[in-house]
Image 1 (cartoon, rainbow, N blue to C red):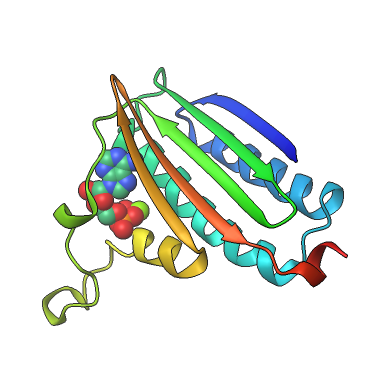
Image 2 (cartoon, rainbow, N blue to C red):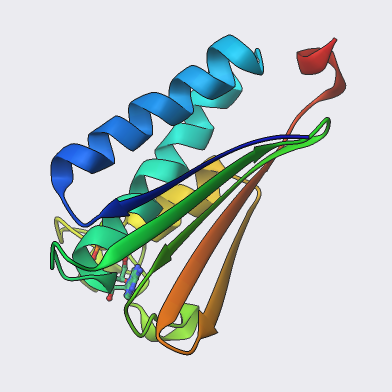
Length: 141
Ligand SMILES: Nc1ncnc2c1ncn2[C@@H]1O[C@H](COP(=O)(O)OP(=O)(O)O)[C@@H](O)[C@H]1O
Ligand SMILES: [Mg+2]
């Protein structure tokens, strides 16, 4: 297992640095195949932006913790913000006719489609979203 972690203030420039760092780690060090990496980064981007926007509400002093792990059979990323979180059942379904034309509300759906699993965990004063993407055997050969 290989792992990389960050702890950042809620600042958009830092989000960009984390994304570049994670991409470099998975591509150049872990040699993840570019197709798999692309879809994993789609999910990662959505949960990271959500932590910044909805969790920490762009309050610069609030921290975001990020951990990305490379296992022989999967990629995993956890993003922890300092907000009160959400439940899947409480967010509008973006595929329903009344929501189709809305410009927002698709990030979690993208993350679910781009990756294999999305987990939510609420703790005292913090909220964590975890994505998991399975790797096919050939990718690590
Ligand atoms: N980290 C988070 N903390 C609190 N609420 C969140 C978080 N991530 C997502 N949400 C809630 O889930 C909703 C759907 O998220 P998403 O699908 O990414 O759409 P969008 O970000 O465009 O609103 C958000 O509008 C927000 O209410
Ligand atoms: Mg979003």
